[in-house]
Image 1: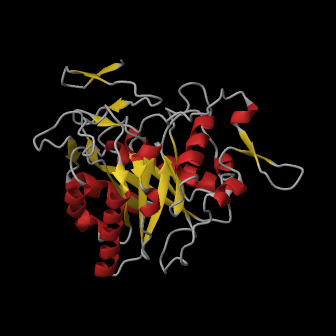
Image 2: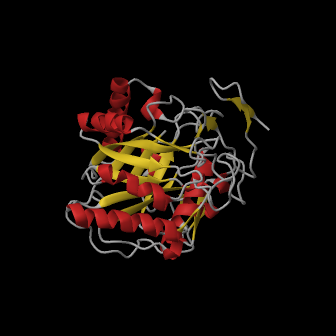
Image 3: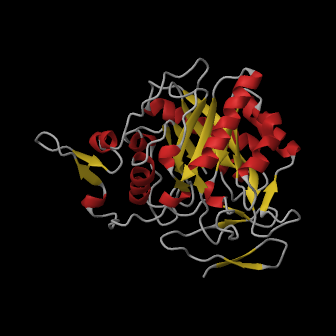
Length: 350
């Protein structure tokens, strides 16, 4: 069982290795957490084996071989494209692709947003935006900063809820950074033992702005299990997601806003239950974001098994500069990801 010391506390925290999932712990005011490694697919094979990288259609001869996650027939059988009305005026998706830097400015280990000084971070994001624009000139890119505004904690804290809400001045600081490059802002919520129904309304003051959107992380919603964050992968039910999307829909109507983008992270099947019961709303664009880390073959398997196989509305894909490459694997390129069917319209770098 790997252990890590929390800076300044002297305490050693045990982090169990879950079945097929390794959780990494990051320091932020005690303990905050990274997304865990992608759950290994039950039929996973060594990355050198061609069968782990391709799948064949059952259509006309000669058979076409596709990389895992790229097969249009597999996507069609599972319900893609999703039946939905045309996007309303002012909608970002699907006309644009969002490319975001994720993290928290109080931690260099939670992601690119906080790893580098502000000016360097924004310059790096702009370079990624340019790479995506070059790879797919047909779709404009909307830059974004994805701030973890509520961070799961390894200790209960004063409220006993195993989460820390970032002070408003930190949130506003990142919002100002986003405005410098005409980026949008996402606030991401890791509830810990709190309930999304309690904590989401606190952010109405921010979400009432037309360029602020929402992310929810089931990995750290621990209420259903009662377990401390980092000891088990959390979960959201469709009912929780429907609550949040209705909250956003109400804000759009109340403040006469353009549609909101709503990102839900996922890298295991149980992280989102009853996905078929997720309700699509006229002014909320739901992105199911494959946010696990690992080798390309593992990320492909998870995209296919947990995102493509359970359609909601739009898809996203997360890339980890360090965790995806720490075993010598290359970081997946825009050109590789653009071959996925459906093609992700939200790209996140951590």
